[in-house]
Image 1: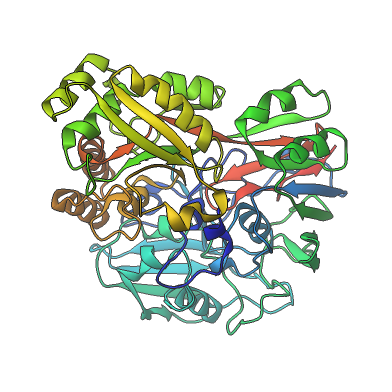
Image 2: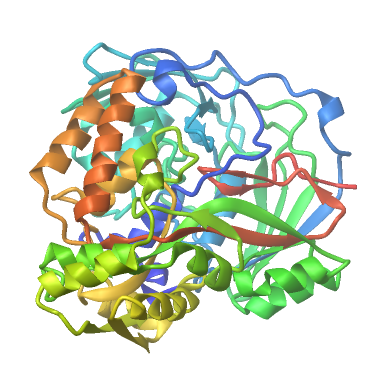
Length: 538
């Protein structure tokens, strides 16, 4: 985890990894109904009228205290959901707060504090109906005033919320209005059929109107804060007896600590000190699997590392050099050796092959070392090319991925010198500044991922792609509520990125955790990363 992830965000340098961490997906076992239809993936329509009732037969026993050891944290736990930074912030804030909606892995949108939503035909005016009978931890009832306040905070550039770049281009504070006490209306400056998906970001949690002090973490979530010791990086949560979803949560209490020592994450769970730990590097997965006292949990293909070859820097100004990198990389080797098989093959776009919006034609492209050599000769490198690749232990398997990539690229005459930089300064000194380096991202909805990574105006366009055609495709995708049109436009956008961007993404990586066998019901979802609301101790 880089120092960039740990420092206080400012409005002109919003943390990229933080923003994308909001988009990690896979909602295995997530509770409640999922509203798909037109509103779920963009378009005119309504969400479900409420969460599906949960059968008590499907839940584990009630009671008990689960102990968590969470890795990847910063120097403190951030309890303001709008400015949360690291993985532990997302997990803990997801237990304390709730949003209007929550995302699933196939981009279904689950009703939470909103039970229904719809847009006008132009995708510019959205109305969200609020759930009745919801109260905050201190007993105050949820009203539209709270939602208006929470969403307007996200649009304050001075706050520096990681979702500010996503919402600011289309939504102004005066466009967020109460429609009585039980509904809110959002008037956009331009069409966005994917607005419900955007509001599924983990930063879009609802807090009481006027809140400026988050030390008590007053939300509407399944747990409430019992204690927090920032000096020891420890916390205690207790079940919220007034939680709106009947029968949940199952646990009485959750006690947790933050830790960045990878070895301790596995050992502390296996020894019985903790029930849950992670996430862990794939190099430790075998030790977790070999332990009879812990089991491995996988958030499947939830993140990826990429090689950035910035198109505004030599030698990557030549598209033949960029294409040669894509053709020469051995994707299977990256998955097998760097990721230890914990992931899936990728195709130089930030969209999984299992995603409903994936451009299927990309999966048929194969490695071609001879063609990579031919392109290098045409680019003026008949004897191959020498490159310096920068990396750091700032994300899972970033260093291993660079080392393995070096071997396969050498077969095409691309001679790589891997240079490791300190993790603490990597995202200040290397990211968006150097020409050839490794980065790490977490999965988001295809439209959001491509917009933040490749759109000409994107603040984090690391590949330096400037394509008016891509900008047009993404703009058109936002403007239509027809799923088939969205898929066609996003597919064309992916093909353009795979063909032109200095972005080599060979494989997805599972986000891995370890847990005691008696801890059941842990789920993963796009909004909160790890969900303990249904968790129980057997």
